[in-house]
Length: 313
Image (cartoon, rainbow, N blue to C red; front, side):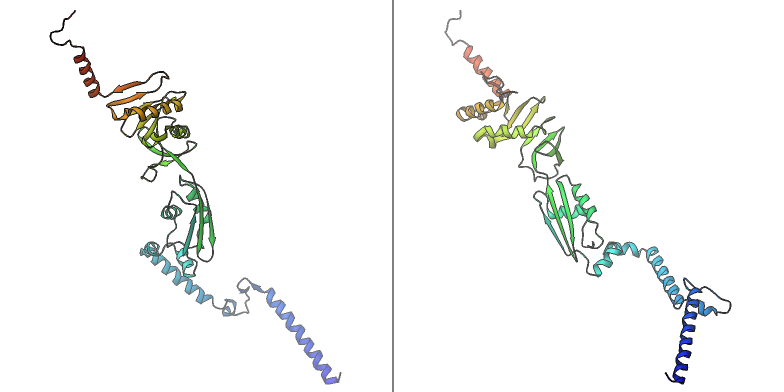
């Protein structure tokens, strides 16, 4: 290498070393915001660039937020657009535009959405799927629920309902119960009116027994309106015309079959009687209405009175 070029290279090498050394020294003197401070460094060099603008912007944002809240605008905003985080997420396209609900039979979609707390103000981004599942499983008719978020804007809900088996009346209150007797909910509408109707303490746990019993009624089944469990031991059936059919504790199905045949042949329910007691296997006890009993007593009285001119012994 020629002499002048070698000198320039050495001089350049020396300047490079000096530059690295100063940079390292400068870094050792910097703190979190830049320079740690030096008597010889002007203050305008020690303040981070843009700090003033940032503080001013933060001040105005804070003032605006306080004024927004104190002026009642925050509550009005929530009423109109929902929580701020949900409104912001919807602006980014993360709202809920479609909800797919599967597994409902007795419930409807409106009830599911109301229970889950999902409205047009809700965003998918800030929706807590676990909380929605907990709310749905709190519904008496819902046994299990699953909730999936499908970004950017869809929600999938699947529920498994409890199966209502009967209506149960206890102390004047009406409940929907499952086949095992589990109380599902109070009856608040007529959607379950088609279910078998049982009455009395413990009748809910024996509703499956009652339903198996009325299967033996044949053509009479459609006329049975309710079954009352008497003293937790036996059933009394109520027909559509108010007639009570008292069944025994044992052999209830056989007794009901006998009554069905008797009703078919004699039309007992068309007569002025209140109840038919089938508890004895060898006889039937019929209780008449007051009017029918009085008419029968009068007829027997007339029958017992001797005719005119007849000798009385």
